[in-house]
Length: 158
Image 1 (spheres, one colour):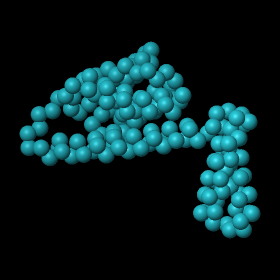
Image 2 (spheres, one colour):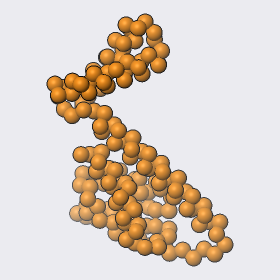
Image 3 (tube, one colour):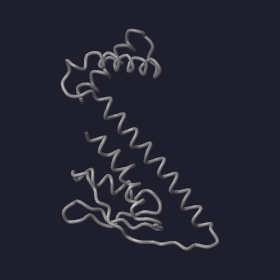
Image 4 (cartoon, one colour):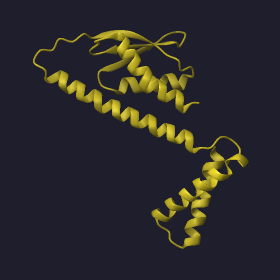
C-alpha cells in the first residue's frame, strides 16, 4: 500500500513537470491521473488498492462528525428543557472488534461524543462499560453504537 501511495505521488509530480505548471491544481490533476493508472494496473502491484481503506477512513470521520453534531444538539435540547428528568447510568456494550487499537479507537469515539463516556474495558476485551447521561433504552443505545462506530471501524480494518 505504501508503494502505491509513493508511486501515485511520483506520477503526480511527473505530471506537474511535464505540464510545466507547478500549482496545487496541476498536482491534484496528476494525482487523479495516477489513481486512474493505478486502478488499471492494480493487478500487477503488490498489496490491495490503497484508495479503498482511505475511503473507509473518510467515511468513519464523517460518521463521527455527524454523531458529534447530533449528540451536541441533543445535549443542548436536554440542558434547556425546563423539566430535566434524566436517567444516567452505566451499561455494558459487547464489542466485536478484537485488536487493541480498534478497541481504543471505539472507546475514544464514544468518549468524544457528548453525553457518553467509556469508563472501562473488560478483562477479556469483549465489553466496554459506558456511562451515558440519559438512557431511554439500553438496547437502542447499544445498537446505535454498534451500527455506527463499531461497524465503520470494522469496515476500515477489513
